[in-house]
Figure 1 (tube, rainbow, N blue to C red):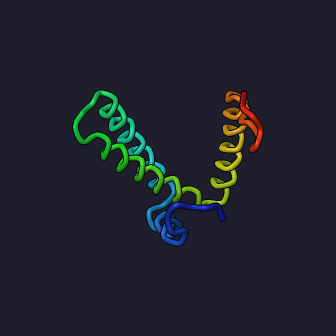
Figure 2: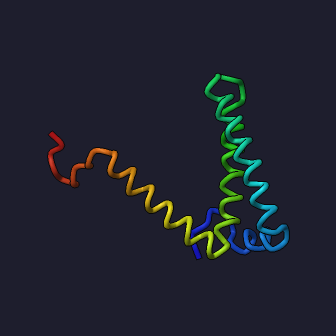
Figure 3: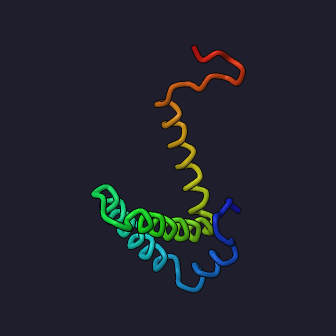
Length: 102
C-alpha cells in the first residue's frame, strides 16, 4: 500500500462507494478549481492564497483516493520516479555533506 496523506481505509471506502469513474471526474473538477485559484493568486486577488491551499488540499485528497487502486498506485509511483530523475538531471549537484561548496 502506498503512503497516503489521508486515512487509507477512508480513501478506499470513497472509491468503492462513489466508483473510480466518478472520482476521476471529481479530480478533474478539483484540478480545474486549483488552476483558477493559482491564476487568481498570480494576479494578486485578495484571499487567493487560502483558495490555492484549499484547492490543492482537495486535489491531494482525490489523488490519495486513486492511489488506493493497485494498478493506479503502481503506475503513479513509476511515473513520479521517472519525473524525479528528470528533475534531478536538470539541477546542479548538491555538495556532499562536509565538502567545501567553492
